[in-house]
Image 1 (cartoon, rainbow, N blue to C red):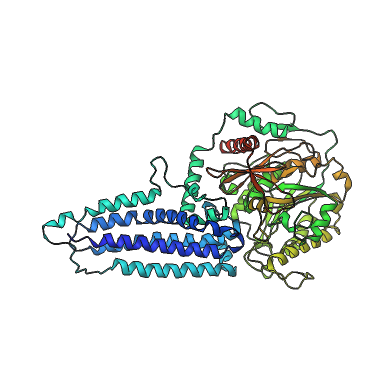
Image 2 (image 1 turned 120 degrees about the vertical axis):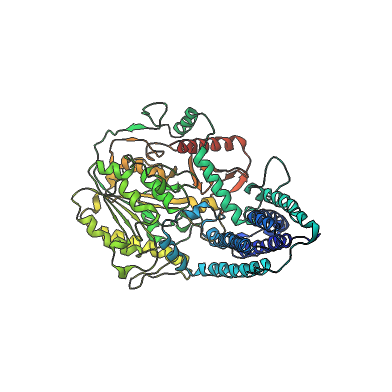
Length: 636
């Protein structure tokens, strides 16, 4: 009996995918050499585990084509329509897989995690994303890699499928023609086994299989980007439909209350508590500056920090400066949401997008607006990006000023105008206010692709563009404060400076700390605003900004958020996310909660890396708090 040609075609395409995934893994490793220290001793495990994931994805990609080949085996001549359908399906799914493989490399470069559903967070702003991709020269390498791989794949695919409109190939002859489909039963069985990824009956392959060693980069490198992306979608869907449930609801509430211990809770089933003050309210202006990627490791006033921010360092020395502050996530939308609402976001959630049902009347702009404040938001780029405009206006901002409001000649690139231009052009809006004002600024210059302004007095001591842009961002802050000093409202203003998230500076740092450890500064020219006892070495987070500002102003309100006034309440722990991973930190440790390879790490002040440790009691305490936070969030 002569085998149907589809059997050999499936096998050849399977081998082609293994080769393609291997080539992309090599590119991934080469582009992250700075993170590959010690990987040599794990190379064979990496190759073996990587092939396991690659084989799984390859088998999934061949499931539908094998059905189509099976259908062709019933014909003596392969129908052209089935040939074309097979080619179209494999071209489309293969193109998507190649795109994920190519996009995974710059995604990891930016976020230090394999590509996941978070990459779709900006799909509603395709114009902005296209500009962002094509404005950054580094991305052209991977666009070229994707284009080359796609052309190569399509050529080999067409050659392998051997499509002819009038096929003359005889598939089978004689009385055994009915036996031709039988070998496909074996093919189906092999594809199912390959797609499961494991022979064990209880569990199929999952991303935890990638954690085969003590080297985290080797483990991540073993993952297939297509598998990682699809697994994140599955995890997200499970969370949306099922939420988190780790403990009874009252126990979760108690976990959060025990962490903060403020008085005045309205009842046992809620976090809401009434905040009042003995001294009279102070209607000072409030300026909140959310600095793009201003990680603690960029500032000279932190251990091992770069000496890139002389102005910010000097401002911190005469301010209430919280040195142990952490961002809610690794994306700007996480930081923006948490700074303004006092709440964290759930893992893999785009909080500006999902908060569509009703305005949050307890978020910071609404609270201040209800107290007679004028509210304004300023950003360097398109105010519609990331759902910002709708979220901000729905939640209490009267005006949102972005790229469309600035002179087009000042726009340098996809991130809009330089920081100092945004600051300069905001002055007329603030000066015309007849009320106390709350103004929030979201800077953008320290975001790739970097665009350096000309015709300014800015000078740099650095050749490295990543360092030079930080110096520019610091210079623009100095210019802004000098401009503010000339305004009549300056002395009656509370300035709050925080980052949207951290950043990897040298590529050789603990990812959790570098991406989340950020400065939090409260400054006022009027010392009477800062006359409170400050625990500036205490644990803090972006979620604490709203209640702490309300405390500085002595404005009574009902606190319904997860944050607390840092000057009156000691925070024992704080939880945040790194895409799918849930992390909780206290003064000496952090714990990563995930399905596999969860772990407790000891923070080493002054050192780049945190060391994994084994303390079951400490781990349980941190894990329980993280579980409580995200369980309550998922029930909202």
